[in-house]
Length: 58
Image (cartoon, rainbow, N blue to C red; front, side, top):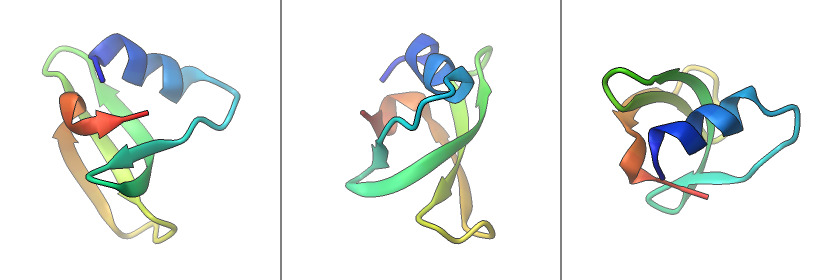
């Protein structure tokens, strides 16, 4: 995924399925300047990771 698509998903009112290495994630923040995204893994709000957006798949 590229940064523009990650930002579009984050800004969307729709629920769009995104995965990180096969695990479902929610995008919580997109750092467009650095190509990074903070994601919540699964349904646990405490389980967040900051990853390169190119590791995310739609």
